Length: 184
Length: 168
Ligand SMILES: Cc1ncc(C[n+]2csc(CCOP(=O)(O)OP(=O)(O)O)c2C)c(N)n1
Ligand SMILES: [Mg+2]
Image (cartoon, rainbow over all chains, first blue to last red; front, side, top):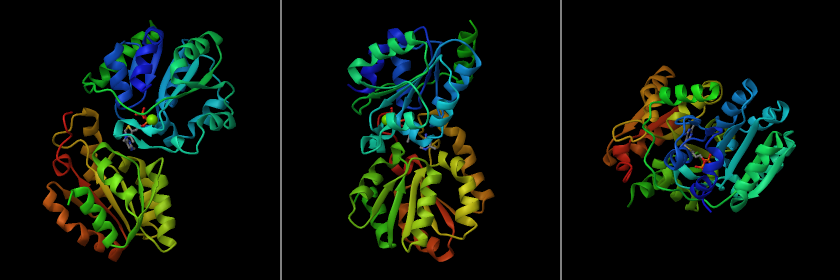
């Protein structure tokens, strides 16, 4: 499965949750599949979805699901020790690990080679790290939500992108409706 | 010869044998060429300042390096440019996709585009802007110049240079 197929499958689970979504095509795909005020789309900064989500989870009680990417986590690798040492049990970091920089044309990242993100997350101090095959994402995400434990999911899938329009929503509108959804 | 091939040949002819990249959609073709070229060691980096560290080491180890990245990465690398590349007076050709210029489909990219030249100018980084493919005729000269003066040099390549963004 490719990222967009996974997102389509888990959209009903994501629908009522606070979601922080990775830059580029992942956000375009989520936006096209099921745009919700509870979605925060990262439009321009690479690597910070996990940090934004952790800050949000630490600041308020609702569950926060971050949809991140392998390339973005690798560019902000310091995020894993910070997550591991600042446990927020309402935080789920779901890294879509397609082994590539999807948005820029599927150039390989090191997770498609020898680098093991799950091992890195564990070594960084993250306690509940699960490796999931694409088809099992929905089950694993539901289990993570029900566990009430901070969870890092590494979702292994194929690289490839669906064709969707860019998000033209004003970033301040995205931020404002998201904040209203957070405090609702 | 495709522009991607021409750029790669120019790098090789300038003696560049060590290239680090962080991709941009506009750079996909040239990164492919570089990856396949037998005379270039291509080392993808996870972050652009990491890439500059790799280039600094390669330079001190006797290789001519280059970095290929997006202009958003100017924001990531200011400190490294000042305290490593410039402070130690090292040459570094930076082939940069100039996102957020004419034909850009993603509004957010404009935010760094409006800072790009100002930041480069503030840092006294020699800057060349390729707007048409004919502009790339100067690339060999720019590369020679870079290794003559031992400075970071920016080569901004905009969407018109690359022929737009396809159907997006
Ligand atoms: C500083 C910086 N460098 C490069 C980019 C270009 N860029 C945008 S998205 C992306 C790929 C992200 O890959 P990943 O997080 O694995 O997500 P995927 O699309 O594969 O799901 C890159 C390299 C950028 N936005 N910012
Ligand atoms: Mg990826």
